[in-house]
Image 1 (spheres, rainbow, N blue to C red):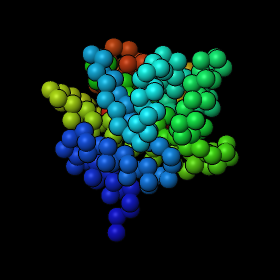
Image 2 (cartoon, rainbow, N blue to C red):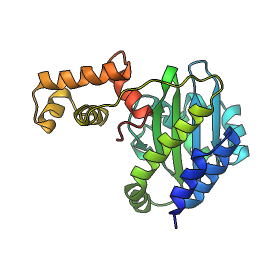
Image 3 (cartoon, one colour):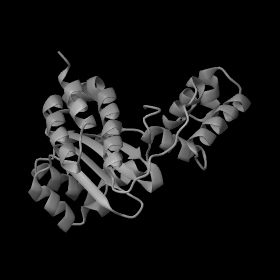
Image 4 (tube, rainbow, N blue to C red):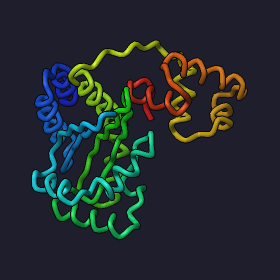
Length: 237
């Protein structure tokens, strides 16, 4: 018998419309046993789409209060390529603390884990799990489920892109194992010197791998290459 998660992902892969994504995210919330799961994207034209399990009154309040401007999750994740626990974000400002208190009062949870995703043509998306619990319980949850959440986030985003009206499929070329290793370590925040040391190669050889990966991905620079590799699920951090 297939694992419950695999059944959910199989249903996600067969989704024919955005409403099917909502059904999948509700099923995934039950699978992970968290208070909420949310997927939200913004494309280069500013069009937004979201699905998830946040209560409707919180969604409306978020819009009414224009919380997008002060939300540390949005602000912090837009500056990152790697997944982040909410505790590592900057909640020090008064607007951020007020936002957090309001969110908790609406049942969003005091803990969260968000996966930022960069897609083609300027798309930015977030896949987030949130829950109300203590720090130790949440740490155990993220340690056990981090990889699954990252993989599911990219699967979710890929399906949303496939369903985007008028989208043209992207051409891509496979990355070599060394190119994947190099981009993965860069995405994790390693310097070029640290990457070269970790892979036991010279920095000149590392440049060759990075330039080759950049060319295959059609990226303008290394940062763009990392973003494209993450968005296509070619590397996982």
